[in-house]
Length: 184
Image 1 (cartoon, rainbow, N blue to C red):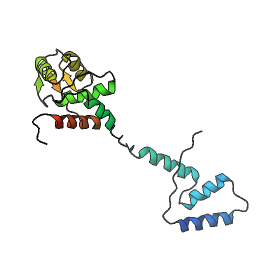
Image 2 (cartoon, rainbow, N blue to C red):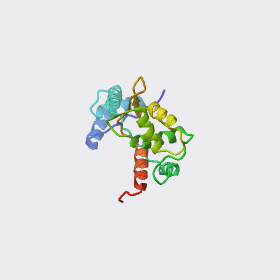
Image 3 (cartoon, one colour):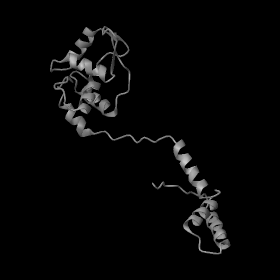
Image 4 (cartoon, rainbow, N blue to C red):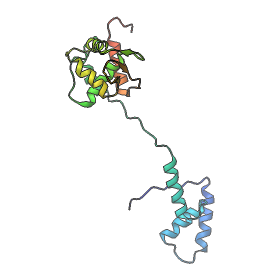
C-alpha cells in the first residue's frame, strides 16, 4: 500500500495543543496510533482521520497540475548552431529525432505565416534555407511534425501557427542574430 502525504495545517497551534490535550486527558489509556491520528484530525476541525484524508485526496485531485518548465539545454543549442552556416541555412541533417525537430522549427520560422503556398513555392523556401539538397525530405518532415499542413492533393501548403518550444525559440533567435546585414 502506497503512503500518501496528508498535509496538516492549523491557523493557531495553541488551539491545536489545547484540543489535543483535552482529548488525551479524557482518554483512560495510552492511545494507539489510529486513535492519535483521529485526535489530531479532530483537533484541526475534522470528524476523524478518514475525513481529513478524504479532504486531502479531493483537494489534490481538484488542484490543477503545476507544470514546472524544464530548463533550456544551452549546450544542445550550441551544438545545433554548428549545423547552420553564417546565413542561418541548415548545412547537415541530424540523425537524432530531437535535433531534427528543432531544426524543422527553424525552417518553419522562415515560411510566411497565414498564407497558402504551392508545392513549388515551399520547395523554393526550403531550398533557400538548407545546403544538403533534400528539400523533399524537409518538406515531408515539416508535414509529419505538424508544422505545415498540406491539402489532400498536395497542391496547397500552409504553415501551422503554433508556439515553438523554448529551445526552438532560442535557436531561431540565435540564428537571426547571425544573419548578415542585421542591425545588432
